[in-house]
Length: 466
Image (cartoon, rainbow, N blue to C red; front, side, top):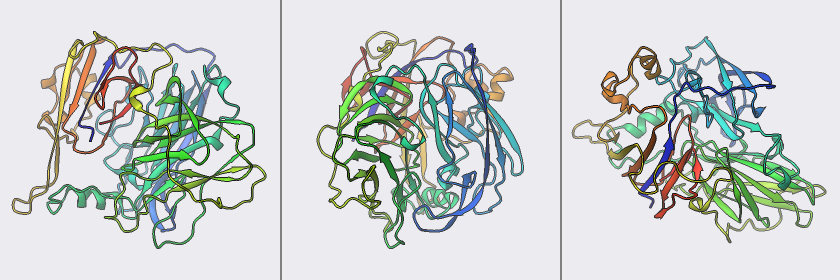
């Protein structure tokens, strides 16, 4: 069990400026609506972007600006009908009002409404994703990949192919609607605060559930002798996957948009919200090979979920259009150790190299209380004894209106006010099972993880799992 982690980050003003030149402005439209889909063979009404799951790829080059118009066409009363979109991993400097969290940086987009997000990408490149950021709405399907390519990628000599065909979106999938799942989870009946287990795991929107109809698997086509950069995205609400490729080692070159020193491994574990880029060489005999992604936090509590049996196919040119004839096997060999990943550029944590060696130290103590039938008490998660609830006025609007002290915000916002340029140390404790934490607008250095302390060249990313 991973019970604690520490990360440090240097905070600059949310309104800091990145200049750009010779950049393209790329228009995109996301029509957020309800469609009947069956990613795992079970037809249900979904909330998705442009009628598909996962949503369409949004791509750009380093330095470009994306202009994304989001049209809210949601109408199904079984699911939330307002929406907002978060661009997971983008810094959006001088542009935090386009970050997307409902009631934090914006009001939700009402049904029938439209909002245009202008996303200045600055110097960022790498693998990202987008998703609804209103309550648990993205569970119903509003999630998709976002990739920023770098024409001067320092790892470019390591691979030959890096395009839409090498994007791997891992996700969990539920048959019931998100509001129903949320109500059940928070219910006083849930005395042991048991998680809502998915019905299926998907690879690029394809999977199956136990007892369901036969379904096609995701196929990744390769040519013998070529090297491929696969971009892995865990776009789940819950699922933690163990990813491997039968018969193929890989080299990890990116974590959450951060280039890292190449790391050779046989398999890795990827939590919700995390991303990796891996390079594989198609150097095996022409055949079909299993792409393996078991959901290692799956459970038999949901009889629909076959959490060990989540596979795609790596298909060499010239191989038959069929599943591999070999046993899938399981991941073995060298596991990627997250604590051993090293940033390629500017390694080293800010501040002084010891606990407390920052301008500000925040201790975040998580706690959970199960439901109680006797008192009709719902499940309650708290940080430092406080449960978050959306404010009546979005937090950013309060800042723009002059709020500058912690007392200017609602107690339930749990706001911390910091100064421009301060180094902040954040200590997370009290998490009872592996759980991802994501920081908007920044990457951070993880100076303590799984008992490993490192201030010299610690892992750097925007999602850490405690």
